[in-house]
Length: 388
Image 1 (spheres, rainbow, N blue to C red):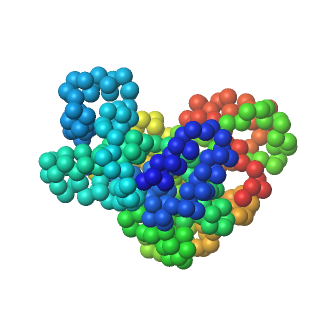
Image 2 (image 1 turned 180 degrees about the vertical axis):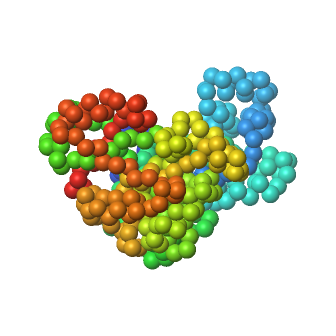
Image 3 (image 1 turned 120 degrees about the horizontal axis):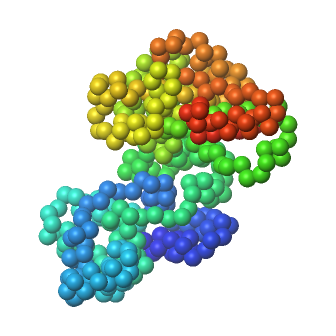
């Protein structure tokens, strides 16, 4: 836990990207593999489930500090963060020689789900008595499910690439999917071929950014493709073997949310991965995104809801074809495969191609962009034709 606390301090106390990268690389070189694996999980939003309420934590913090609850609540109001308030008011450790690692403390938290309230109280107060203030703060953040850190997945991948001497794209692919430190190991994730054999695993998502200058600064329009920016859920449709999977940009497996897309297995051959947008769609036009949110929030999707708010997959890139990763091929070539693949699918299937928007010059394209709302989209996306 001490190494993890030091990493958090190092990251929190600098805004320099290079220093953050150095801190991450140093941590991954020195931390036990089980701790490093949990750190990667925490930084990619794979947090353990909360096993105790904040109401109880406030009561126990006041008890541990030997102060009335109203005084703790007043302190909490002043500090503004529960994890920090508890770390500040609870006494310093009676013994600081504890050697429990990050993995040990997370296992400790997971085990709390199987004990009664009194056992939880004793265990948590005892834990506070063993941790230094900065460690207590992180312990509380993990305990409440509120752990956050200003480090991107890309930065974590870059640091790991330095330490493991691996190519970043290959490493990013290994980090995708439905893994947790409870169902894999460091060696299985980074050194085993089986990590790449998981048929459900998506490719890393690469996000767009706003164009800051004039589009004319990009050179000739002939070197670029323009597409409409649709208002849906960015996703990957994966058909491998006899199974299909649907992933959101947030690395959430959402196959069960959109069962009507299962039929696409009939028209997309195994070994196909599409990048695109999940969109509410009716009468050949998009529905409001708010309608899609109604479906996302439901645990079970009824036939009635699927009829009221049908969805399609709007495809705009082909990432895998005939079971081969084709991301390194130019975008132009990928579209030459994608376009006829989607266009030959009968109209009744819930999939559409995101067409290339044609224009003679940047001025004409800007005029098209100004009419985005009429086309039920948010604007235009630009992609370099020779990009991989």
